[in-house]
Image 1 (cartoon, rainbow, N blue to C red):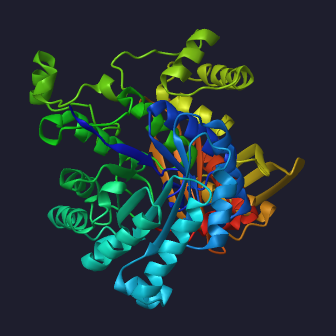
Image 2 (cartoon, rainbow, N blue to C red; image 1 turned 45 degrees about the vertical axis):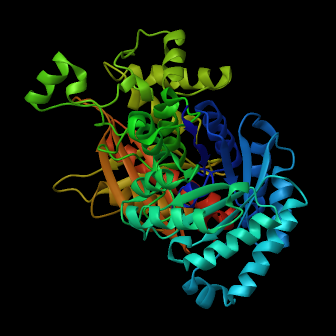
Length: 514
């Protein structure tokens, strides 16, 4: 009989620490419900000490999720642990996750603590957390660069103090797979009471080895993986849930391990995370990328037509990608539209469906065919977005080889209409200059990208902008058949996200990097 691996999802915490990926409470709850449908064992909902908003978001998730454990992160301090418990105390299955760095470089330069101080503080934190709940996890931050014998002493001490899970993070993605596996084996064999706790790993992807390191650790004896959807997270991201889970599923012959994940929910979960965070999945991303089950070369196509296993090591429907496509157009009804939303992994209220359907009909009058990507853009613009301070009402641009590029813009600013005009070196520059002048924005445009999100001459263009102001960074997205209008929508969306971060500054400045 196969052993079970506990899947601990930290998309809502470590994943949210990706620049520009902050989520409000409603977005976190929507994602948490999808993660529960996916079948994760534990959801790390946030870092309550980061801000009042994050505390409230974690508390909301904790109050609604019934099957999965809901975890809150806390530094090894009583204040943090108090806030963590305040956030998760109403959960059906609460967990407190506390951490402290154990590497010499962190202890010397960041913590300015001795090894004895670290052991003492770790034990005190676990004991204090244990006074609230039996379910306590301890993480040795930067564990992969820690002295292995000291690491064993820390784990032994915190398990004795009551930790039920001990986590070995490769915080900076430094380890190599064989090296990390050797460290896991050493710690397990040299920590006398390790059998009293679940051994967990949390790998980052700085060298592109997060999934490989996670699988190596499982082969060496770890039984919990800390992962994120699409591999999002600090810097280069975390080990990807879909990669780890499907590797265990596909190579069960070598690994002999199971999870509770409902794999057919993977793709819809991936798309929802992209919509909420604004972080798109690269086309060649394993498992969930647009090209993951696409074949262009003639030899490949011939092989797949004869037997899909010639070039596919897993069936697309195993991760929720169906070969059947529900084609939508202007003649489609509300029922077909609602079915498509469900197929894409979205569950909305009847009022939200009505609003989306009305927008869909407007788009269908302009397009011959509506693709999945078009629907997801509608969802992103109409439902999954932060509250708007600025709304684009009207845009008119004059440009050409002999005309000075001029943009006339009408905005709603906090519900009041405003109109202005401005110039630029091109139509998009003129549009951005005018909007910036009207909103008083001093943001800097860090990135501007344009993609065609569907095929054909009448395809929608999708624009992504990354804006920075006073150390805050936000992503804006917009789509429209007219690329200048799409750019304006993206810019306004980015400004709204910046305003949200200004009201919740701690969301963009979390210092938890386990």
